[in-house]
Amino acid sequence: MTARIIDGTAIAAAVRADVARQVEAHIAAGGRRPHLSVILVGDDPASHVYVRNKGRACEEAGMTSETIQRPATLTQQELLDEVARLNADPSVSGILVQMPLPQHLDELAVMSALSPKKDVDGLSPTSLGLLLQGVPAFAPATPSGVLEMLRREGIDPEGQRVVIVGRSVLVGRPLAMLLANKAPGANATVTLAHTGTRDLGAVTREADILVAAMGRPRAITADMVKPGAVVIDVGINQIDDASRKSGKRLVGDVDFEGVSAVASAITPVPGGVGPMTIAMLIVNTLAAAKGL
Ligand code: L34
Figure 1 (cartoon, protein in one colour):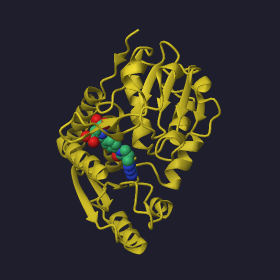
Figure 2 (spheres, rainbow, N blue to C red; figure 1 turned 180 degrees about the vertical axis):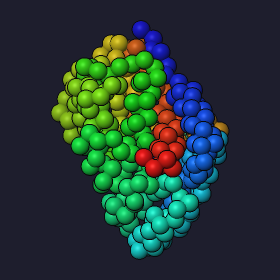
Figure 3 (tube, rainbow, N blue to C red; figure 1 turned 60 degrees about the vertical axis):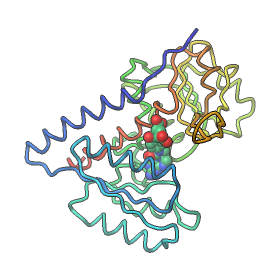
């Protein structure tokens, strides 16, 4: 079998086009133009690329955005003050603090400081708590991007066995909650595996839908995948590649070449889940502007 490639770039473009239409309708109805404020601390090159892509997606969807860049030497108090200022600014619809933060900053304290009404990233304890309760609030962008991608591809997780490898707060944990929800496009039987799982291959081979999100380059190999499974690769890892001009290239947590020969459908890296993350961020930003 040769897997169908799920085109995240195209699906994300369709989502963003839908948002752009809804933004114009919202403004035509007298609403305020949505505005996203992104806080970017330090000079991690990958974070700069992602944040630039987020700003561009806002503009293309008819939203405004600003990136507040601060040096890695920023203090915890300065960061909390910045968040408080944005919380209080009525022209700001949504706030995102790009992760990871430099070591000396407390990510949980920062996420806790976000107004739940502006937490378009869905990472505050309130948003994550509501997600655990099964109450609709802002869901984190990468997990909701995975669900939206499956929905638009006609892959229904209902009743299926989903194995997620990776338990991060950004992806694995919230994705497990979303997929286990008794809701259309979810209602799956979810296993949350991780780097401590004994005989990981035996667990992943149970999956009808396998999600790789543990941040280990090409760790999911063909022998770990049930023939015909759908494979969603959330990983983004930079590896050395002497054949490239840059000397580097991006790979996922899945060995794409090998697994493509076994799976029925697979997401590529780049061009898979990454663009969906950005598309769902602007979905959430519009919802925040509407006061949802
Ligand atoms: N607060 N921090 C917060 N929210 C998030 O949702 C994120 N994430 C993750 C890292 N930190 C965060 C992102 O924005 C990962 N992430 C993200 C966003 C976009 C892309 C990748 C990761 C993306 O656009 N990926 C492109 C390739 C980009 C490149 O050339 O490097 C892709 O096609 O996969």
